[in-house]
Image (tube, rainbow, N blue to C red; front, top):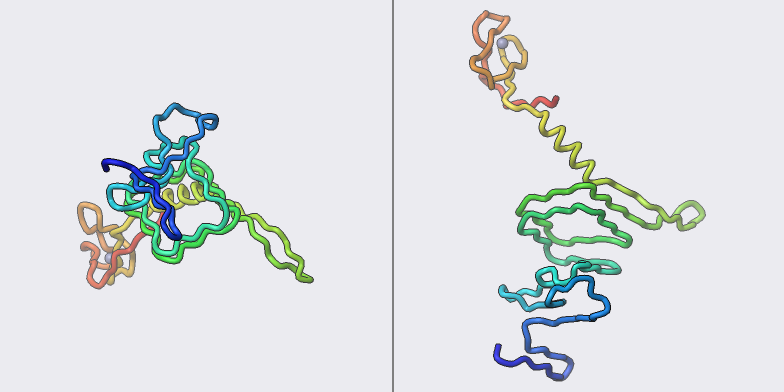
Length: 186
Ligand SMILES: [Zn+2]
């Protein structure tokens, strides 16, 4: 881009530039060179807080609506608390292509319910999603698959071993004929 320009055309302010920067020296907490608030990026997309120029991050106040779909292409780590004071609504798909690591993620939902005599009652629900995920991971790690049902002795036997064991019905190995693959949870 040879020159940048700001134009006023009917109904629009057009900035012919890559970056829209908001930079207030007295509010800077780091000496990062740029403060790129909005960038027309290389994939013809709009990037907010380009390259993390604002060390304080992005805060969106009020109700957030994601009308199409939410995509998290890489690995995302949520290490702090996420606070939803109003509402969060996603109308389309939420897609996660990478690995999502959640540690100590506290989701706080503050809402108002209408109680008896139509009195509004403020209500706060707190869920530690990080802890829930840790519990789920622990349960999943205790699941062992490849357990089979033996039609001869009607018992379950583990087919991941070196042989088929010894069936009490006939002294031979257990059978996996007609059996599904069962998962046992420890
Ligand atoms: Zn058997």
